[in-house]
Length: 282
Ligand SMILES: Nc1nc2c(ncn2[C@@H]2O[C@H](COP(=O)(O)OP(=O)(O)OP(=O)(O)O)[C@@H](O)[C@H]2O)c(=O)[nH]1
Ligand SMILES: [Mg+2]
Ligand SMILES: [Zn+2]
Image 1 (cartoon, protein in one colour):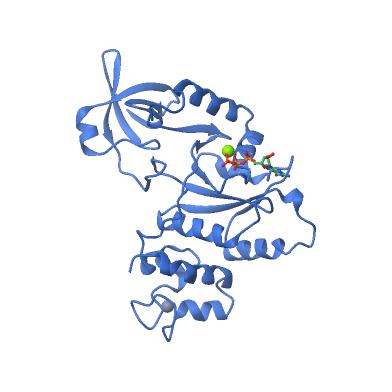
Image 2: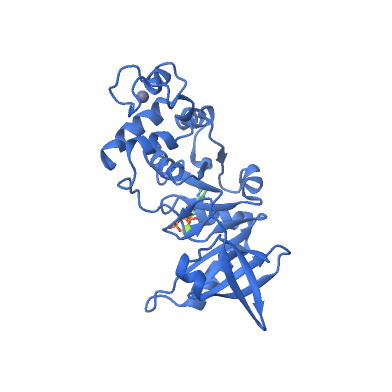
């Protein structure tokens, strides 16, 4: 039988079967020897008397290590308009890392109630929308209608610095969310034992990870070529530069630079890409 791992505490795995039943499982020795099971994994399970065992981990479409989650459909970058201030540098760095991990980025801007009507921020938002981003706008007591449909049927990781309103957002969609996360941390206790715990919570018909993803902005494991090739805004131009190993900086005949000049690719994004280059592996 096929199932999805939605919670891991030490060596206890909670899975959700195709008919939506929750089962507590153990991982069979041969499985643990191959790959560590992650939350989000699709697995094959089998009954052994009164026990259920995870027999096999099915192929993953992607995997995050910190937090450990497999098969992530999308990452929502949560950024406040103010308090803390909106930063395209931070949004773009997160977005690049998300895309390098082969995950789709979505932008959610919170605290829009703190923004005046003709604020510069609206130009930046337009730039993201024109570039092809799904851009959700939320404020006090006004959550973007689209958020629920974006989450439905997907595995989502939220990311964004502390204080931007990630918890507020999930609670406004589902007031029981905070309660559930608090219960789990209480049951696990804090400090002493560092228990391996990650959980996917059902919110708006989808699954949301309880730990924020991409907390370290680490570019040391990627190369300029890998990064550029991963970005959906660059993809239409990849392979069209004069030099095959073009990293789109000073090379003549660079299709990306030309696209930036023609305003087909966002200048903000291109400049933030250039800023990240020195942080990468050669
Ligand atoms: N004005 C305004 N304040 C908000 C909004 N959303 C959240 N806040 C406030 O921002 C503060 C931080 O919100 P949280 O939801 O705790 O932020 P978080 O992203 O979960 O932060 P961490 O858990 O530390 O990562 C709280 O005081 C919220 O009341 C909003 O849309 N408008
Ligand atoms: Mg929070
Ligand atoms: Zn180029």
